[in-house]
Length: 560
Figure 1 (cartoon, rainbow, N blue to C red):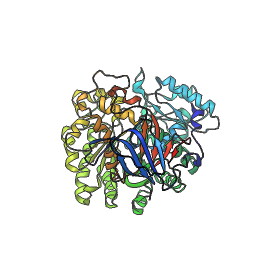
Figure 2: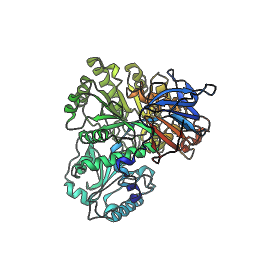
Figure 3: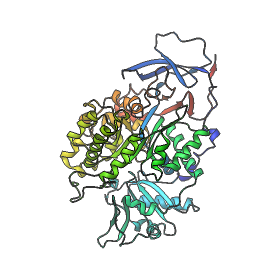
Figure 4: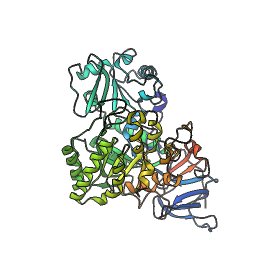
């Protein structure tokens, strides 16, 4: 698995086919096309014409196709849709995950430790063994792991493994020893060192406590960062994502993105949120917003983290966890610190996108937005709440009232259904993953996956949005199915509404004239198959800016 992943890394010149030529007018004909129009109504088309990366027009079945074009491409009756947009993902983390120990799907602590052992054996030169994706909720034990199981397979190199949600991590004893973590170590504000009955650290660190270990891991070099970004973006293109909103990166990653942009080797578009935790946060804000001339890279928003995650019981709740009396979760900042970061961004004309999962965190964030939007006059910046996962009924109404965007991830509901009600109880769960309640207030939902927390495949998200079921079609009828989206709403949430949430609705999200020629060819009809099969859709081709970026092999075409 790990060696195969390395094969994804190719030279920059191999990313793109050199076709079509700049300025060419291309007609993609004989397709089963779907897009949305300016009123967000579904429109069908049978041919698509584009020139130099922009859509000229679509053609209906009865329209006469143009004779004079530079290139004609036969779509062979395949389904064509606009490129899909993930409104919340982590590009660099996804690339690092692809190049490290992949723990997603491990069925037990022992299986996860076994994967670490295999990776260590195959990569003897790697000094720090790192990975991501474990989830104790899926294990029969339902218990957090410990250092002992890692020590049993590798004790001569430090090990550091992120939980699936990125809000907890698991270390072996050597890693803790190198970090100076002992029974006398204190929990940092906004974090927790998990301990046994004697107070000895078990090896699991939650939220800000992760920095005790991660802070001593050597920083990757620029080339290593660019390699991870390139692997990540090409992988995302293969799943049908033509644009992603990168949910929080700092100065080093931003610099790497800019180098890839200057080298003209970015296969998809990235709308990056500046991490408010970056040590040069105010300097980056002072430099102002950024958008390159071809719209492959933009930075006009910031990402603030309000609390932790539900699975690790770090989400900040108004009342204690139903399955952990006395625990109400963790807040990353006090009100003054949170509002300082928000105010700085708003005054610099940056959109503020704040992570809030628990109902307490959401309430605090909305209270802060209400005050600061009025103070800064920044309503039109479309500030966002990332996740908006557990809400009180009163706060559900406030998104529309304040003009705040709920940026949500549909697959979180189908992944969390096995533990969410245990955490929240039968009453609070009514305000959790509440897509229908939010939509009914008139807001637009920007959909995404939170990759690598969840799989980046957007068809998984479309399926979860419509069915509220996992890929085994469970539970029967859907998990709280009254919160379902319609297929058209879900489609909009991954296209035009995600574009709108990123201030890019004038250029992305539909295949209307003048917009970017970003589109997908699919192996089946998204709107013509049972909803239970949506997750099985395969992307045959991904086109960005009028160029085919997946698959990468050259394609034979018919010249006019």
